[in-house]
Length: 110
Length: 110
Image (cartoon, rainbow over all chains, first blue to last red; front, side, top):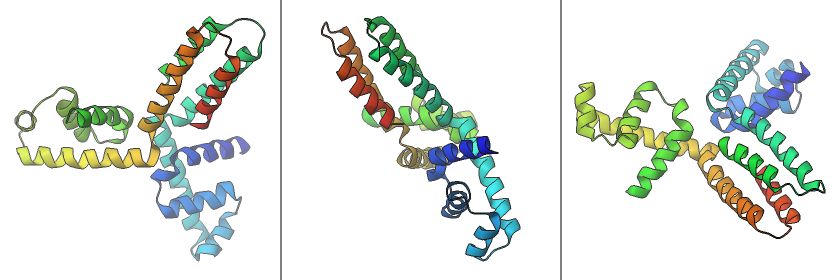
């Protein structure tokens, strides 16, 4: 569950601009602010089931956007390469060729 | 016009997965394969006006996606930084600090 929460937080971060304001509000309260379904239902004066359905549909939409655009996946790949480049830069050896090839891998991700 | 064509080619490249197959086909024929509106109309046996309207609507959609996700803008910024990092790597001086700060700028784009 924690893993799913983390993933949904990232997907929401990347794709929230493509959601409706209502979808954004429910997702934000549920995943970022850790509200329960019941608390969100009370806040918006709708049924707990309606909140649940909306959030489930939004989760599916976010996964569909990720399937199409892969922003989260590319972010993860870039993050790994950034980390490796930093380590390489911090090492004492001369590593220009290595850095160059990492840069090329970054470029291919675009 | 050439500038617009280039921009549309890029936007199509980044967001085509979010379009319908029909939108994708028309855009691809018009912008990538340089078909005229009349040729596309003939190919699909619809009016030239219908092709024109569809393409204009798709252009607006692509600009809206770009406004929301800024994938093309970030790509351009990353490309500049990549180029600068390569030049820095090719220079003879020791430039680890410089490279490090460019890496940090890249990370902030994600």
